[in-house]
Structures are given as structure tokens and as C-alpha cells.
Amino acid sequence: MKTNVGSTDKVVRFVLAAGFFSLYFVLAGNWRFLAAVGFIPLLTAFVSWCLLYSLFGLSTCPLKNSSS
Image (tube, rainbow, N blue to C red; front, side, top):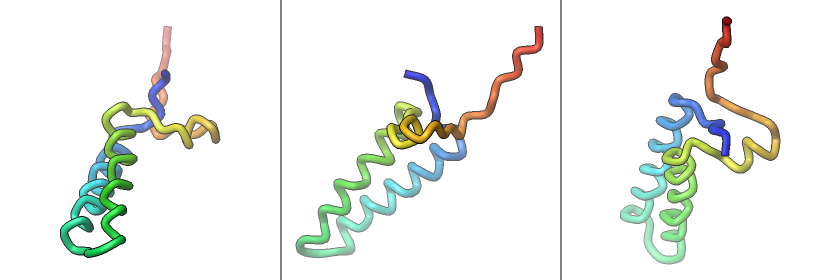
């Protein structure tokens, strides 16, 4: 599995996950399922791979120069 999530994208995903997790404490009732949605950006940040990026051929990883 080739990584396609760059370091800036990882930080954004961690912040987004923290925001979803904080909704668990702020919202009541049936809206608490949004906390479960926070696991998606958290997981993709940890493994540095996103399924949607792969499907659309996107990548936020910097390109490596192979000057030989």
C-alpha cells in the first residue's frame, strides 16, 4: 500500500478527528454518532493512506527527487 497522505494532511486529519470526538461531549441524543465518524480521519492519518485518494489518483505526499 503506497502512502498518499502527506504530513500537513495528517495534521488536518488529526484536528478534524479531535473535532468530531469533541462533538460527543457537546451534542446529545442521536447526534453522538458523529464521534464515530472521527475514527475515519484518525485511522487514515495513522496509516498515511486514504481510499478516496487512491480511487481518484490523488496524493498529498511530496514527490521524491531521484537524481542519479
